[in-house]
Amino acid sequence: MARYIGPVCKLCRREGTKLFLKGERCYTEKCGVTRRPYPPGQHGQGRIKLSEYAVRLREKQKVRRVYGVQERQFQGYYAHAARRKGRTGAEMLGLLEGRLDNVVYRLGFASSRTEARQLVKHNHVLLNGKKSNVPSMLLRAGDTVEIRAKSREIGRIQGALAQIDKRPALNWLELDRKNFKGTFKGGIVREDLNEPAIREQLVVEYYSR
Image 1 (cartoon, rainbow, N blue to C red):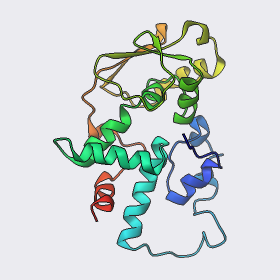
Image 2: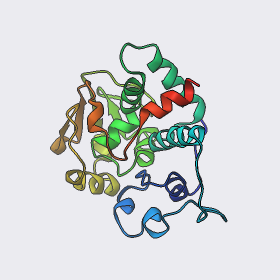
Image 3: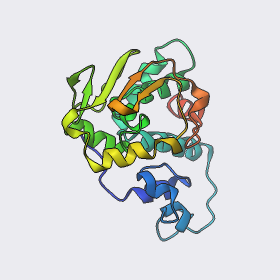
Image 4: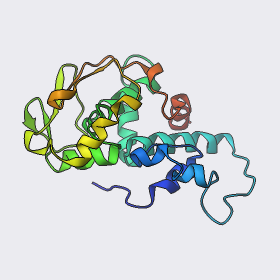
């Protein structure tokens, strides 16, 4: 599957906010948005007035980049959410939050979603006790995610887990830190997803135009 391999700090600068794509670096003064708080490119520091369409497009791109999915895949999540009962935007975010790579990141086993995706692809993660190397796997309530016993000594995993207290606690996840294990309980609360701030209604308006 295609994936973005370019400089990720440019993505944050383009959206004008931190997307937390580089883990702990995003919380330091080395963050690209902190050092250069304007869009990349020759005309990045010029005054640009966005149209209504551009505002919706930028919000769609922001959400897509936060979760690290490509356009066609993102459209699939939106279509799936539109068929569900409830608010389409909230349902779409619920699907994205239920991805295996995102849950690995949220539990604190990785410092970024990109790193979480790599852990999954390299078979360091067990889903319900079995190997699963599909980052886009959607979890169900009650599913357990754990780091394979042989992988628990990896420095990046231990380092990420040591920083978990800096992140907001999420009620739909239960972490057993000692055993490198977590449970996805479902029931995602939209109001708890505020890092970065997301305006999902603009994404719905973009696809509904």
